Image 1 (cartoon, rainbow, N blue to C red):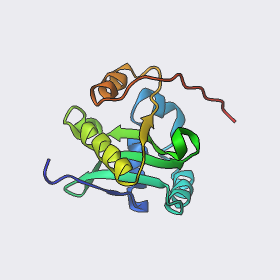
Image 2 (spheres, one colour):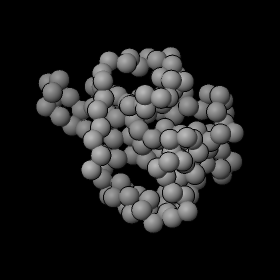
Image 3 (cartoon, rainbow, N blue to C red):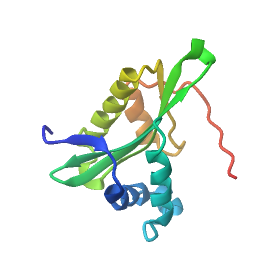
Image 4 (tube, helix red, strand yellow):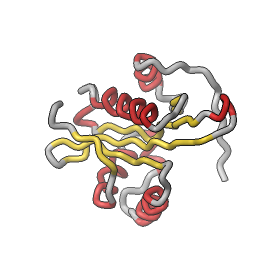
Length: 150
């Protein structure tokens, strides 16, 4: 995978990112690749925030993976900055290739480089394969998460 590039996402990457977000049972229920307008607006907000890092993995000009890394300064843990990894997606053709591990390791390294003391992520309770994947990469299922729709 020496020709793999992990780089900041651009507006031109939005269709490929949204297609990957929609390409699973959960994403198919909540994503809308037919109308990119809300995604482009969200991208503008992300691009203007120095603590938001939406990246893509690209090989031979083709976007094959993505993740969103957020840095959060805080008071807890003696003023630690933490990062959150979200929206990890790998193109269906690339699953099982090691790309997911490379993306997560990039996010961990980037978090460390930016001074974070902790990196965390969430995964839907139904994604048991993903849970095993994250545990293999050294993540610990240490918390119970809650959401409330608005």
